[in-house]
Length: 242
Image 1 (cartoon, one colour):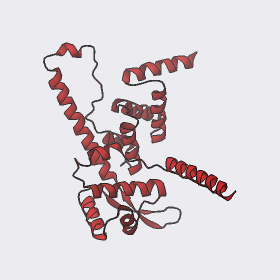
Image 2: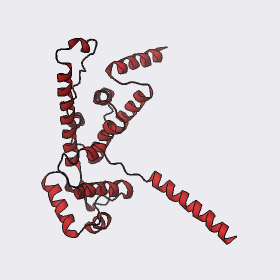
Image 3: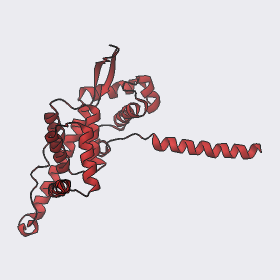
Image 4: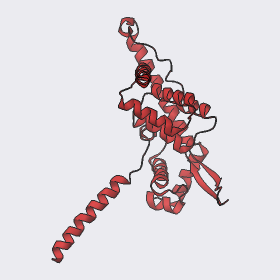
């Protein structure tokens, strides 16, 4: 009886742990994994940034102590100090002092907005290089490009800058993460993201939840570019009048 109970308990415990691991995932921007070498980050600095994301997302801790980070990363206090010194000096990271409006308590948090800006620059440079390669590939072969319409929104425009302009304020680290997630994880074309932003502005609902709902709705209806979005809007409005 005891042995049977132990096996059952162990199996249930294992299932519980597996579920916890599945539901307790942390989102790491793909652009960070792809470009951290381009940004001249060491493995240790990269691991520190990942741990800051983990503390924030999984534990709601936006200002973990050096001791906590040291225990997670497995490095010395001197190494932690060097990592922070470089990341802050080169603009990847800063510390914000914030006041809780309800309690008037001051607290500090790590701000990764600088990191996201640098990743955006890497993404823009990568797309620019790809366009240059395409120009070389299609040079002297204009017939291959016949029938392809040019996008009214050029990819070299910085998504983050455009969003900040439309919102009339700097984006928060979480908002930077959201935009990166749309590009890297959801694979939404930049053209569609900017069109969704435009729709939100016209509707007077300039917030990320509304834009995300637009993108999700378009994805469900296989809207992949500006022309698809136009046709979908016409079908939607036409159906609404019937």
